[in-house]
Image (cartoon, rainbow, N blue to C red; front, side, top):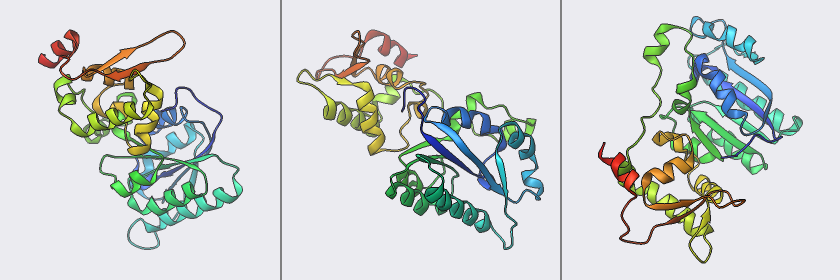
Length: 264
């Protein structure tokens, strides 16, 4: 993940049928890490009762509502409008990337097409999002990791909203074979002769292999916290070199602090 906001110009295209308005503030704060949201549009049939909660959010965040009447049963009209606008922006918008906010697999081909044109694609959706859409993005963020900063507009949303992922214990992390393989491969790909790798480079490698990789999926705000909690990697912060990490030699026990956390 980027360590600081950059000057990338991004188009934020929101599928209103598949997104709750209460997540928008946290969503835009997340997007600000990747660049500037120069285009912000939300798509849906705003005449329907189920989208009435969007009005205040749209006004507060200067999001342009794109009206799309449901001429036929289903949500294909909204999806088509978003896709057409994205292609128009691709050729006329002078943009560096696109943020597609939806859990709908219908946007898989769109994401692939935008990337083929050299644009960075960030996806945002629920854990139910099909793998095809996740894999088509450069990075995919699950909305439930943003829930901790979400402010529901109505009490009912507290009941329906998905909870932020619970923090995994050290023991659970060490039992996650897929996670360990990703991290070990990342360290191996960027390590020097002594086995040390810059954690930022490890993160970039892992994200390319798995677009939805995010330390928050395991309940850790930062990747360094996740790696440290596992207890199988050495972590150092030499001056001027950022965070360095390497795998502990075989047979080396987990650190005392990590072992204690695993027991609790």
